[in-house]
Amino acid sequence: MKKKLLRALGLLAAAVGLVTLAVPAQAAAPVYSGTGWKIETYNGIHSLSPDPYVIQLVKPTTGDKLTAAQNKTAEAQLRAQLTRTAALLTSITGTTFTLSSTYHSAETSCTTAERHVIVVGLRYRPAPGAKPGTSQTWPCYASANNSAWGSWIWMDSEYWNPAVWTIDPWRLANVESHEMGHAVGLDHPNVDGSDADSTADPYECVTNSSKDTPLMCSPNGGYGAGSGGSVTRAEQHAGEYTPWDIAGLKALKANFG
Ligand SMILES: [Zn+2]
Image (cartoon, rainbow, N blue to C red; front, side, top):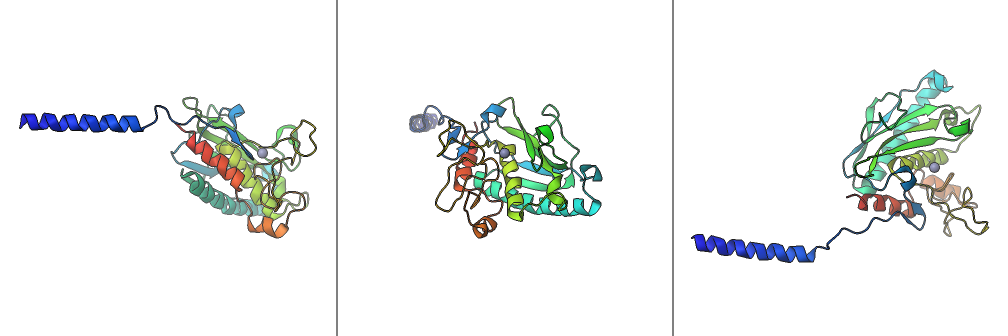
């Protein structure tokens, strides 16, 4: 009996040996950029964790220069789009993203930011220099492994005040998914294009015959968003990541570990 057991163990060891030989000595090297996508390594993010991420809104206040009614409209629009964006990110990356129904306090520092919480709020002209019509994301990274830790996003409250700003609904949806792209670790993939002036200018991104540009193109990319693009196409794909962005999101996930 004992002999038989030993023989069985010997066979198992041989099998393990074979498995070991079949597995590469190291995982594939991380990739940080490709055509139309780039990872935010300058912010310390190299990868996306398989553990779930939660999106939480900051309760809008009239201090953000919107009326109570405008805040209500803004919150409803944000919740509807962020639900769609979360579903897209989940299906693309395999990591679960959900929008919480509860509010979060305002976040202002990566040292206090909660792990895997993406805080989204309204602020009047939140970008550096109070640039009109501009939103901003502050992404944080996990110091242990450089995966996306969590972040906070301030959407410019002007978008919901038609007296001072007009923005097409599809563009607004694109901006929201664009900022979420930053939150999980995507950078602007702008490159010097046909003008060949050695500078990656605004709007200067890879494009195709349908005038799509990466959603992460800065600023205002997405389906049909390039010069001469179709508004119908842009509306049909509002808030969606293009194949270029999807390649970047998948790379972020593949880089984990
Ligand atoms: Zn951006």
